[in-house]
Image (tube, rainbow, N blue to C red; front, side, top):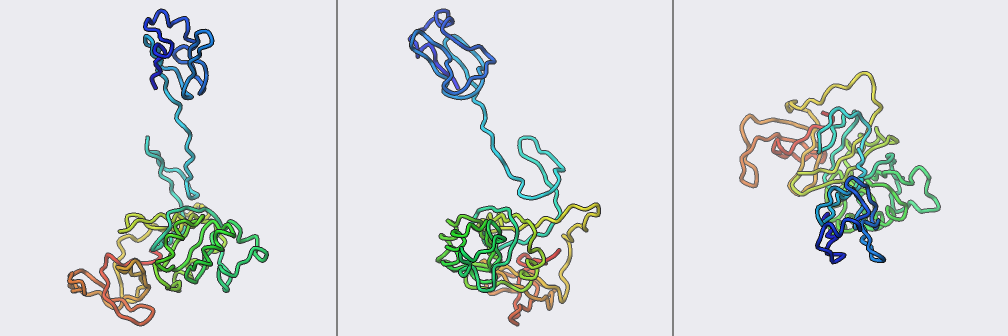
Length: 301
């Protein structure tokens, strides 16, 4: 930042200004510290920083950069530093990707809500285990459950779905929200319930980032204690097999679990007119659908 001391004092001659200057190059100055003084007239530093240069009647200041705290978001080990970018953290744990999130983040312990639902969790009856926790509910979110979330100060909520008219309210919620199934009134699928039951009580990071089109997906990362024996790496190139349980993402943003019953060798003509490589999946409701391979995920791999 350039401070024109000459203009401030009405002095054009650098030699005449020199006796007025109270700092030297290299000096650290606080905001409102005196840079120069003439009688009762004082020139104060507009920023906190360091004096870089005094050139003629100008004083050049380098403003001190403000500190920014950046959370790692998970427990792990720094395995790489990237200058001017950040670090790479390696962790071991379980990952659940959601269909929608409200763009917020929470780090806390996972707790299942009572079978009566979030709406029945009153302040005077609330167990301390729930305060500040990430609450899992098997039922769709409602206006009342969103109000309960705010009143009880839950760090976050994992739910299967919510109606379209509640999206704005969910985005304004004080905690993070992740939907496992999508927009509507769907209940939580059995594989997701079983996964969450297996990690209840553990600390987790709920990153509810979401972008339309899938460029960012809401995620739940559950850390496990680091051990000497590392788990097997994920099978990224695993091919679909008959009988495999998969998760199918639909065009409306929802998802459904099912079992692979066939994998045709040739592309399949879909209702939208596209001819794509597909697998035939029998959903939990008994419906048989052809799903593009790009829309199919294999849980646990």
